[in-house]
Amino acid sequence: GAQGLAEDVRYYGKWMRDEAEKRIGHLYPKIEVTAEMAKERPDLKPYVGRKLTVIAWLWARTVKSPNPAFAQVDVPLASTFMLSTKPGKEAYVEPVIVGGGYRFTVKVGKPKDAAAAELLAKFGGRAEPARELAYRLYNLCERKKRAQEALGYNALVQSWPEIARIAREAGPPRQYRMEV
Image (cartoon, rainbow, N blue to C red; front, side, top):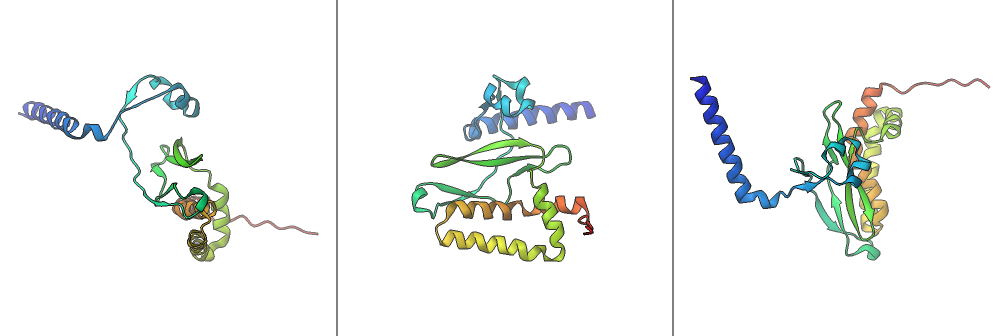
């Protein structure tokens, strides 16, 4: 009956998982949670010293930095740095420039784009031209070999959907009246 079917599904599911682990497991290494990681992410404290399976990967194209000082650096180009947008379980990665390269730090919660979202709300119907301007400035910086500035504009363009979502949730901008 149903119990036998459930047992079969569990058995073959485990078999498939074990086979996948044997064949491609080396491509997905486990990561050991360190005390240093737990300092930045208190939610990891119970896992310090344990090896965990990575459950999310962000793939990004890279280009060589157009800045001659960083010509050996591969610059990641990603459409988003969000790992989860589920309400209450938001998580994202934050790129950190270290010497001649990058590393990424996982952050729990929403990105700190609230100020940008408020500014976006003030733009109203002119928001799309502002996004287009950021994209054009990114391209200009790339052509002029200004990698640091290009990275900033690229981050703004990548964050745009999240900024727009925060702006929508915040509602229309507040109007202030000052009398002098």
